[in-house]
Length: 290
Image (cartoon, rainbow, N blue to C red; front, side):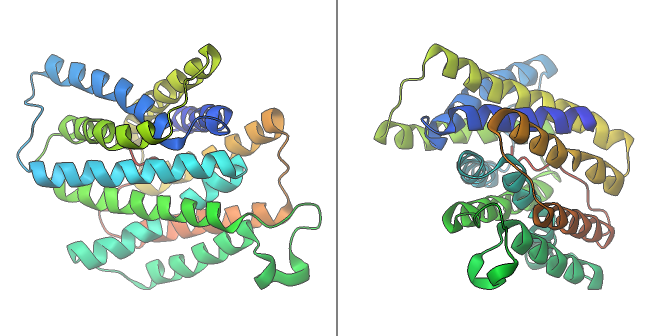
């Protein structure tokens, strides 16, 4: 799980390195092209029918995952790495709520408490001046509202994607579900790229390859970790991604981390663990919609 968290944090570094010039849709397309080729090879190697049974829901899951990635990558480009990562980790509370609404899974007091704690953590990370007044950052301004909302939308879409995966898991092979995500992401992101095409430099092309490579490595290590550890423990360890993100933000992008952000991160972690312990049969996931 630590290797998975490290890989996903390095994916965030790659996204941020190109995010100032390369649109989020182009980053999504680059990742999808690499993933669709690798997923197809894995399906052929395992002799599995790639097209699945519930194709409509598979396509919907791919579309939701694509929207989630667009939001996540846009937030990573606009916000400090640690803050963007913390905001994305609100997805377990969204998942619990959506699973209750869509799948009829019981939602208990712990999950309700997790939602309240998680949103308090988000408030401390974002520190909107209008709400905190003089209690906000003394050395840094409040985070910009639009990127914060985009990050929260990414967490919500990630939760929607996970709920759809829970439904698909009853009838589809995991490799088929994984394959449909980039398969749908390519045609959805292409028109957006065509609206604002940017030719990557050779260095930027390497960063884009890094996005796909580190994402794939993260998924591999994540799968291994989830098969060996309980969900709550695995998710707690995967939260090291926030620590790695803060470290890379400080070392590479000269981003500072204050006490409010640290406190907010702790509250979001607590909300994550509460939401998992309050849901029977819920599996842990890393904060990556793909």
